[in-house]
Image (tube, rainbow, N blue to C red; front, side):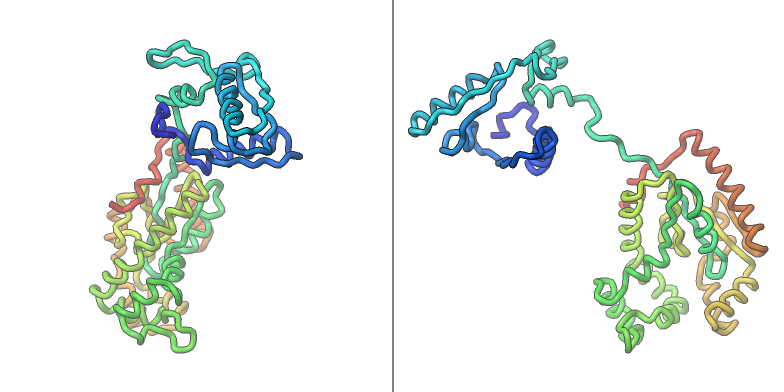
Length: 338
């Protein structure tokens, strides 16, 4: 039936039409029971259901209601009582396009015609995307937590998401075992042992690149779903390997957190209880501070007390608000990889 409809491509799916009609009917009288059925011919159940008693038609569709009773007579079914209402009792649509301009009607075809050149759905809200990155021990995560308290901000901790992405039972869990061997699996829990995996990827650029190719597409999917769901004004993508993953060009701004290498070494040694040699090797396996800062829009140094670091972040936030007030933004869809 839809093939012959004017502008049939604009007709909503049957599920959506069913939902809208049911909501309308229950809003009119919630005490009644409604049975809404799809039809594959102009008459539907009106000419075969013996239990029907009445049909409602507008003045301009009265001929259709009479045709229903004619068909029911042929099938020896009792005629339906016809209730009509004048077109003036409803909001009419006046066509303003094409050869039928000026025609007043309640036809759904003309309603669809009036959709042409108009907004079908509100445009996707623009989300300002900030990448927050820094080397291990830089204090990046604490700044991310501080930003999360700002109004209208969604902070996504991609490093935590990456760990969730390869939990036991996931496809990625099996892929990592295939790639790096069973020695990366914790014998008690069956989960990926992060320290064992880290020891492999921090010592081998090739292994590290393979890990990035496996993990970061999954992280990307999660980030997109969270941003679309929350629709914040500002989304902060907190990721240590943000630049290595190639996300920089998809963001409005890149904010880099750094500390001198010796300070980062001391922090990592205390936090992870590892040797100075291993801590330094981990730092040097990552992008250098200089390389990150060369790609940064804003840089923070967390070498001092928290209130000093917070003051840097507050300064950046104030200036960001000024930039946003001038209407700059990035479409969320730009995050989708090619």
